[in-house]
Image 1 (cartoon, rainbow over the protein chains, first blue to last red):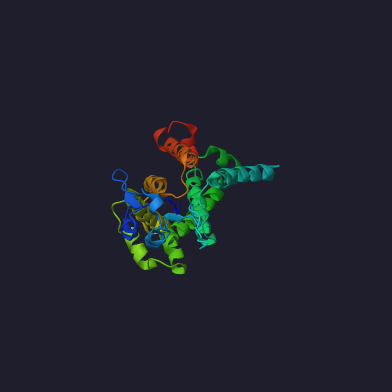
Image 2: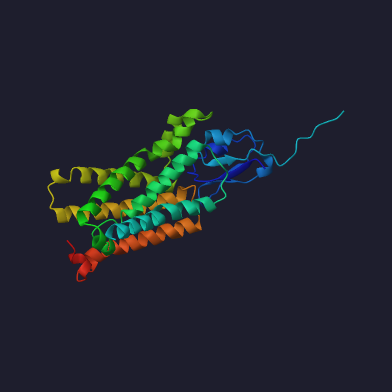
Amino acid sequence: MAIEQINGCIGCEECIKACPTDVIRLDAKTKKAFIKYVEDCQICHLCRMYCPVDAITITPYKSIPVVVSWG
Amino acid sequence: MENNIKLKYILISLFIFVIIPLFILSLQTLPPRTLLKESTSVLVIVGFFFLLGQLYLNRANKFFIKIYKMIKIIKLHKIIGYAVIAIFFIHPFLIVLPRFFEAGVDPIYAFWLMITDFKSLGIIFGLIAWCVMIALLLTSFYKDKLNMTYTKWRVLHIVLSVVFVAAGLWHVIDLGRHMNEFMIFFIFLLVCMGVYLLSKLYFFKNEKVGKVL
């Protein structure tokens, strides 16, 4: 996992526009962003950097271990 | 002996308005953030609970009037009021403050985006609360310059306070990062009790509490 939580979203949609892999979507009912496809997150931090109210938390840990090729 | 009782009530007040909120806060499993962000969050949360405490620091509070002199309660009410207003005055700017030290969106643009995002009810109520708070500040600071009797001013002050608390309550529940069921329940409990205490002054005037002072 990469993007972990969205707390205090104001629904400005900046993170949705910024995400290159469409991880975040806007909940039509609450008008707030939510994490839809967490497995697609590439930990680019763009959503976090574009969020005006600092609502997005990105975990420093990766769920997928780094694969090292040994030739 | 009297000092001990006074100290006891101060400690109980601090326990209710500082320790319990911070305890509920500590129970949450939110991802850790920088010291600056956590400090500003704690400052605003404690400020908010002190603000709720203002509902109890008035002539409607029979217990306090018995122990402390009314003039001392009003003095404390004023000091806390101005201190809390100072915190909430800078609260919108504190949100974008970490942006000055991080990569990403420009802090001024972030601030503009935040205050002009009228899609969020939380933001709209936050802006209403902020404006009402400024009205509260001005009407309190220039109380003597207003052409109003003290009784009328007091009604105005209560009405503005209740509007401020109601709008602020919506704002914190909708957007507050540290809100959970316990925190919401605790806030509602404090607000309901405080508003009930205040309403006793005006809607139940036959009771003795209305005749204090």
